[in-house]
Structures are given as structure tokens and as C-alpha cells.
Length: 552
Image: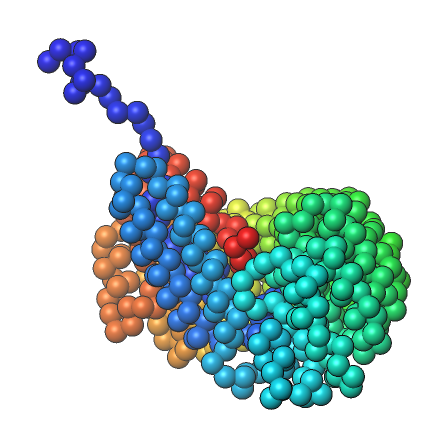
């Protein structure tokens, strides 16, 4: 054939981002399930779902989103699939938000949400059938995300002007206030300033120019100055230092805060210092959340000062904040004074071994700790051994232990196993993306054999586990009465081993996660071929930071 023939030309190399692997899809389901069952600004407002209901919702959401994205992809088969990935993420985010706002099927769940009575202000509170004396929460966050201007603000905020109203909690999230709307809100907020206890101003200036947004913040800050708040949520406002200081009047007047949320706010080192400088007292603080900021080591030093002066802290979240060893060590040392801590989330930072060892000293003080999320902290064996040794002798009621992605090898397995064996209340154990291998998997399995009747989820995917380790894990967890999910995908289990595991789960196949990414021949080669890794890594990077947000 002629070398110049069009048919002989090579097609340009392209990476296909669609479809995602089964493991990626399941990881997304897991993240959504966590969103539905852990405390956040959404579950605080609408209620926390049970594990069972959250799992059902998460699977349905992912399935619907996948179907929509796949249908879209089939219409552009020659594309790289990037638009399908974007649609997939967008649909998951939208449907997850809807599920969060629906809340649990019943309000008869353990802890009553902070916002007890939720009413749709735009519809029900303007109705003559609803008495403002019966309602404590004024919430305009429902419906589509949209700008709010002066005329609409006058109408929507009218119930707040009614004499004798009993509103103690306001939520202005999801509506973007311009200057004129802020000026309408100002005298109204001043009039109810003294009765307010909880204020949610998350995501309330979206899409506004910086100068206007800062002025709006300053107006709200001045109107709310002097209120004695228990809860303040300023998340999702891209505050930075300028935004924090725009709220200066409000922050400086707060000495009784019990909950403070500053998530996804662009909290740099300067902004973190401003927070530390402005808030006069955090002695009553129980919840402090700084998730997804650009804090870094120097910002962590400032946050450490806040933590150090918060002796009643029960829930601390400082995940995805770019904190390294120096900042992690400072934060860990500050946490030593927080002996009432129940939930600790430091995921996705760069602590390293030294900060991990420092953190272990704080963990040894926690008698009430029930959830600890320490994945992707570069702890390695030494940091992990120090932490699990500390947890072994503390936190008797620990329910969730996450140590994924920490370069943990089989050398640390005996200490991890001893810790796991002591934690009889465990419901979830996540050791994914480490190097525990067969020996480590077998040791963990034996640690789970006795008791552990509340265990529901075990994730040891991507650990170079072979047939023996996989079989041992399966045989142990299948015996647990309420067990829900075993993930051992992306290992090197032989075909015979896969058959054995599936046979163990033959009566409960839904408990076993997909084994699509398992490499039965992986143990035979010194090096992995890497084929297909680029596709999956790029897709995973797009999906990893999926957040609940609404369309502009």
C-alpha cells in the first residue's frame, strides 16, 4: 500500500476520559454517602441521613448521573469524553444537593439538627396560615441560586419585620445580595439583632464584583454587630483577608460562639491571622471547620492559636488546607488541650512523619473520640505506628478510622492490628491505597475476627493484596451481622482468588465492591505496565474534588 495513502495515516493519540472505571464510580458513591451522613452546613440544616438511606440515595444519584453522561457521550463517540465527565460531576452535584435538602425520611434520628423548624420562607411564611410566632428559622436558601435585588429583598424579608416574631436563626445562603438588597436588609437585621442565635451567610455574595461583595459584607457585619451568636457560618464566600476584615465588626463582638464555619473561603495565612486577631474569645467553641482553604503552614500557626484557646472543641475539620510538617506539628500540639474532641478531620494535607508523631500525643488524650479522618497525610509507617499506638489506649468508642493513602507498609501492620482489635465499636475501617500486602491484610482480618459486631465498611483496595489476604478478609467480614461493604479492588488477586471471594459473598453479592481494577497477573511482574493509568488518573483528578454546589 502506498505510504501516502490516507488510509495508512495513523490517527492521533488521544486519551479517553469516559467511561469511568467501576472503582472510580464506587469511590464517588462513597464520597456522596459521606456527604449525606456527616455533619455539614447542609445536614445541619436539613438533617443527617441514616447509613442505609444515604447508601440508597448515593447509588441512585450515581446511576442516574452516569446514565445521563453516558447518553451524552454516545452522541460524541469520537470525543475524549471530557464533556461527559463534566456532565457526570455536575449531575451528581445537583442530585446530591437535592437529596441533602430533602433530608431524612423521618426526623426521628439520633441528634436533633441545629435548625429544628425549617420553613420555606418564600412560600409558606408569607401565607396567612403560618404564624411567625411559631417559627424559629427564617430560611431563604431554598430554590434556585440567584441574585436578590432591593425589590425582592423587601418582599422576602417582610416576615422579619413583623412585631413579635420569634426568629432566632436566619439562613441567607444561596441568594446573592447586591448593595441595594443589603441596604434593605440592614435595618431589618438591626431590629432583630438581639434575638438572633444562629446566622448562616454562606454563599451570599456569589457572582458579585469584589468591591461590591466587600461592601455588602461590611453592611451585614455592622447590622449584626453585638448579637450574641452561638453559630456563625461564613463559608463559600471567597473571603480572603479582605473578606474576613469586612466582617470585622461582627467577629469582634462575638465571645460566645459555639460553632464557626469558614469552609472554602480562600483562608490564606493572612486571613487566618485576621480570624485569630478579630475573634475575642473561643472558650465556648464546640465546632470549628476550615475545610478546603489555602492556609499553609503559616496560616496553620494562626489556626493553632484559635484551637489552643478552644478547650471545649468537639468537632474540628481542617482538611484540604495545604498544611505541611511545620504547620501540622503546631496544630497537633494545639490539639493536645482539646480533650473533649469527638470528631477530627485532617485529611488531604502534607503532615509527614514528624507532624504525625506530634498528633499521636494529642490523640492519647481523647476519651470521647468517635471519628478520626487521617487519610492522605504522608504519615508513612512511623507516623502511622505512633498514631495507632496512641489510639489503642484511648478513644474506646471509636467508630470511624481512616488512614488511606499514607504509604503504610506491612511493617506497621502489627500495631495497626492491635489498635483495630481494641476498637470494638468500629463501623468503618479505611486503609485503602497503602502497601499492606497479603501479610498485612491477614493481620487486619484476624484483628477483626473477635467481636466488631457493628462493623459495616472495610476498604483495603490498592494494597497489593493477593489470594490469601483477600480470602481471609472476606471470610471475616461476611460473619458480621450488619456488614455492608468490602472493597478489595485494585489489588493483585488471582482468578482463583476472585472466584473464592465471590463464592463467599454468593448470598450477599452487593456487599462486595466491584473487582474490575484487580490485576490477577500483577504479582507476576516486577513493574506494572501502566497501561490505562493516564486515563484513570486524569479522570480521578477531575472527580476527586466533587463538591455540593448549585448552578450559577
